[in-house]
Length: 245
Image (cartoon, rainbow, N blue to C red; front, side, top):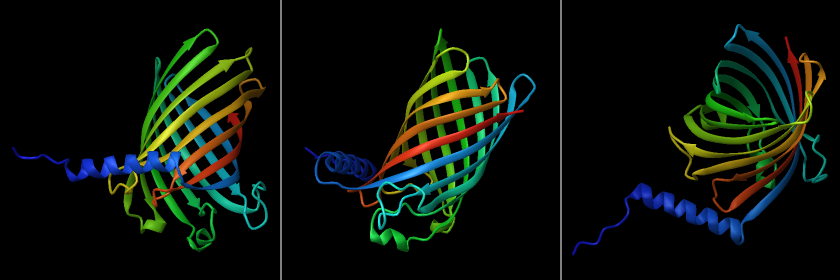
C-alpha cells in the first residue's frame, strides 16, 4: 500500500500553525510597546449612496531605552488615506488608497537598525451591518494589496476580518467593541500565515450634532514576527477627530 504524505504547501501551513500554537502557549519571546494613534477624519456625503472620506494619521511609540510606557518618544507612522464608500441597504463597499511612512516597532536592539520606509496600500472592504434597537453588529472582510519600500516595493497581500459591535447610549454616545484578525496572503505571502490581531474598545461621541465627533479608545495588538516565536504586544491609545461636511 502506498503511503500518502501532505503536499508541501499543506505541510508548511500545518507547521506554521503548530509553531504559532506552541509559541503562544510556551516560551515565545514577547516585546511590549506603548503607542498612541491619532487621526483626523473628514467625511462628505455625495448623494444618497456615495461617501468620500479623507484621513491624516500620526502615531508615536515608546523607546524602551527610556521607558516602557511613554508613547511619545519615537515616531511610528504618518500618512494619508482616501476612502470611497458606496452604501446600499445593510451593505457598504469601500475602496481605500493609502500612503503611510512606517518606522520600525522597537522591541529589541536590532530593531533600531531596521530602516523606515514608505508603504502604498490599496484596500477593499465589504461590510454588512444589522441593528437591533440600540445595538449594531458589523461584519467586514477585506483585502490589502501592499507595496513596502523596505521590501523594494515587492507586492504582497493581507486579508482582514473585522467583527464589531456598537451599543448606543442616547443619540450622541456609542460604545464600540471589536476584534480584527489579519492573515498574510498572496501575492508573495510572508512565511508566517498569522499577521496580527487587533482588539479594540472605545467611546464615540458627537460633540456638535452630526458635524464634529470624537472617538477615544484602546487597542491591544498581538503581532507575530517572521521568526515565528517572537511576538509584539502593542498597547495603543486611539484618539480620532471626526469632521462631517
